[in-house]
Image (cartoon, rainbow, N blue to C red; front, side, top):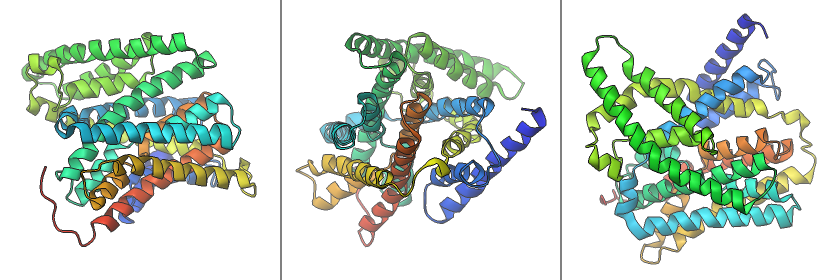
Length: 403
């Protein structure tokens, strides 16, 4: 591919992502839905302006890693501790039920192979912290009792999802399920999360000291991006997905870092806030490329829409995705029914985290085009439906008390 052609294609991706993201936001939907639709429109499914190539895939990989960095940066483990057992119950039930139900329906109901069924179940486990926080903030409920339970549960969901992602990654490259390799992966994940935060904190102290003494602008974004990419390489070197590197770096640099490393090193909230502010434009430049790439990966012309499979599969998985999350919240016996439904619906959106699982299944050759399309439809539907469901539940309700 010639250089000037790639420049034109990248311009189309960025402008289409922004245009459709703005359109989605004006319609009250998450911007990620618009960015996903942008890829469908400019890709082979409709206009065919931008074919998927290796350079775009590489930029999308950087986007995924930076996206997980932002998720880690926004993760507040303190909220998990504060909300305690309620968040744990919601998170564990909301993780296990969709996984087991999705796996069972795919394996038994649709006769899929073991690996395909595992990836289907894995895609249904995650909760998007970013979309959940945005929806609760728009309703003024992020500091309510229900909001604290949801945010704490979403944090634990992320941690469980990251471990599951590492296991599925190992299964995909190893060609199947291997208990010995699974134990090795879990051990590496534990070791990585013990080593990485301390290293990131020490490096951030060095970055902060140099930042105070330099007159050259741009030190923080340059060094933080380098740090994230280094941890992505370190994660791969330890045998776990590169995505974990971005997540661990973001978690370690979070203002709300709640591990002994953070206490010992006396985390500086103002410096962490500056990291967030200066990194946000870079993250928001690269992450839309990933979501557009998901749309580019879909070729809707290759799907037999007259077949009952795509409709039955999508509808079944959507039911599992919604019921699995809501059922976990309904187990909270001490909460009112309204609070339980509010918590359950807030846990439904899969968003960017679900798309990461689906994309891993696609690039590993585990998902066929039909299964991949079905999972993207489910992820998009949960991401779109949940904010509107929360608005309906909160309509006419009094202002909630803070937790």
